[in-house]
Structure formats: C-alpha cells, structure tokens
Amino acid sequence: MLRSATRHAFEKMVHLAIDEAVDFVLIAGDLYDGDWKDYSTGLFFRNQMVRLKTNDIPVYLIAGNHDAASVISKKLSLPDNVHVFSTRAPESIELAELPVVIHGRGFPNRAVPENLALEYPTAIAGKFNVGLLHTSLTGRVGHDTYAPCSEQDLRSKGYDYWALGHVHQPEVVSEDPWIVFAGNCQGRHARETGPRGCQLVTVNDSLEVESVDWRTLDVVRWQDVRVDFDGLEKEADAFQRIRKSLADAVEKSEGRLLASRIALIGTCHLHGSLHRDAQRWLAEIAGIAQDFGENCVWIEQVKVATSPVYDISELAERDALTRIVLETLEKETDDLSDMPVDITEMLDVLPTYVRGEVEEQWSVEQRAELLGDVRAIILESLKTKGGNNP
Image 1: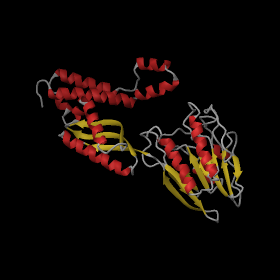
Image 2: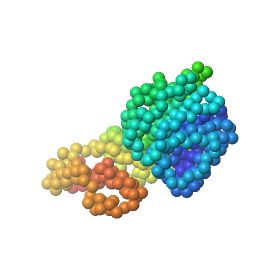
Image 3: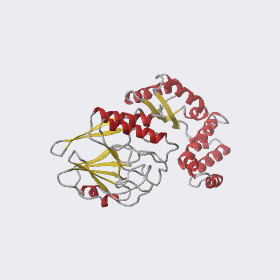
Image 4: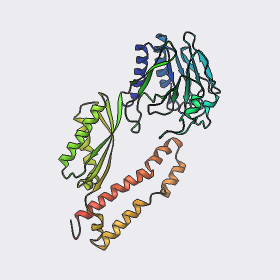
C-alpha cells in the first residue's frame, strides 16, 4: 500500500474533480519526483488526464524543481485537455468559455534562484485572474529556497487567487487575495505528517472567491507517535502506554493506514533495557501494531529518547576506572562535528544516487543516536556490575 499510496491519492483527486464537475484542475509543479525510471509513471499520469478529458475537464500545470525541464529526460505526448506552461517566460491563458485567465511559468532547471513572480503580467480587467507559481515564498522549513518572492510581490499583480507549489505542507498564506499552498496529495515520508489533499475553489458570478474548501485525499497517514515512559518500572506498563498511544493515532488516521515513527521519551528504569534488548523491544512493539489488524499500522522507526533514573555523578564516584569510562563517553558524545575520515573517503567515491543516503545515515544526528545507544548499554552495565552496586 505504501508503494502505491501516491498514485491512489492522485486517482482520488481526479475522481473528486469528476464528481464535483470542476471547470479545470491546477497543478503547481512537482508532479513527478525526479526523472522516470521507465514510462509507467508517464502512462499512469496520462491515463488520469484522459479520465478528465472524457469528462471535459482541462488541466493547467507548471514544472517544479523535481520535474523541471532539465530533469525529466523521458517524454510522452499528453491529451489535448492538458496545457503545460512555458519554462522560458510567464504565459497567460484565457479560457474560452469562462471569464478566467491563468498566468504561469514552469522551472527550466532544478534550481531557480531568481524571483519569477516579478515577471508575471498584471491582472487582466474583467477576468478572474489566477497565478500558478512554484515558489518557497520567503522560505519554509524543510524546503530549499527556490523562486523566492514576498507576499507583496504577489499582491502587486492584482490576481484573485495564487495557487502555489513546492511547499508540501498545506497552508493558506492569505485570504485577501487568496494565496494558497495546497500541499501534496499524499505524505511521502515520516517528515510529512498529518492530512494531505487539495483545495476545491468556488467562484461566484461576481468573480469573487466564494469558498476554498479543503478535501483530504491521502490513503496513508504519517504521524509522529510519542510515548511517555516517565517513571515506568515495569515492561507491562510500557506496553500498555504504547498500545494507548497507537490507538489514539489510529483514530486520528480516520480509517487510513497509519504510518508511524514512534518516539519513546521520559526518565525511566527501563532506559538500559530499551538499549540492551533493543531487538526484543522492537518485536514487542511490532506485535502490538499487529493487534490493530491487517493494513492498519505500519511502524517506520522506533526512536529511543528516554533518560536513565540513576545518577551518573554518583556512578563516577564509585571508582577510578568507572570515572575514566564515563569521562570518555561524555567526550565522544560531545564531539561529533567531524565526519570519520574513513567515511569521508568512502563518500568521495560513491555514485551520487547512493551518496545522499549514506550521508544521511552518518549525519551528526544519526551518529549521536548511535553513540547514545552505546552509552546507555555501558551505563546500564556499570549500574548493575562492580563494587558498590546501586
């Protein structure tokens, strides 16, 4: 289900457009997430466009940074209800049967540092003017700064509605005029949590926006699930809290598959066990997820972020060897600024498509988590063995 989730969500968008008998569909870039491996991706999209054409629904789209003209090497001809805007300069399309004009320009390259909005023409009087733009505005967390512009840049054009792409988190930036990031139809990974979908816009006979209605389309719901182990001593109590937290997340997913990243937090007596017996804990949590039923819960990752109950300074006073071990652990944990030399040399010779994944695995955050696991195991061993055991 995870592999096909994005396509199923897009099919739901097309189905919604047909059911609502919309006048047209806007796509503000990043239709594709990079170059096609084969033609199946293009054929899937083409088939959805044919469905819209059969129902007399035109589509207007621009290329974004993920599917810029320089990125997509394979091409398929599209049905004539689809208009792809120029990547060389802003283009304005006046609709034949509606008092609507759509202004847009796609990305010629993956990186577009210039302000494209400045080149867009001013609004055409007597028409409902729509701006189609792929942009980060003045910046959004988790997104590269492409085609940067300000709200004032957009307002100065006099358009009635700006349909923005690039930012995957849905956001209504302004209602006067409407400036909207619809986001993506389906969250693609653990950083894209919460509902995903599209905006259904209704315009009245006075050419004013009557409503902008959010419609949920995702078929898999990504959620962060935080489980507080604070004060826990018994595993049975921990399992009960995990079950309760997952049950709450399942309810919020509204019948969709819950894709979860679980974080175990709090100060507890189980801290050492969580690291020492990590595989058993993962299996127990996976078993709890199974109890919710098939295709109900999928666990992407379990992150242990608990703290020990014991006093490290007290351990350090036990004997000289223990103190040296603890001081070494603190030094290694604090100094993570430099990538290990052997890893750096390996990255230099790896292919580009592999390097990014390896770099992420060896990031400061990932190295800190790995050292944290080692530290917890050693501390647990020091706590339970040796001279003056607590």
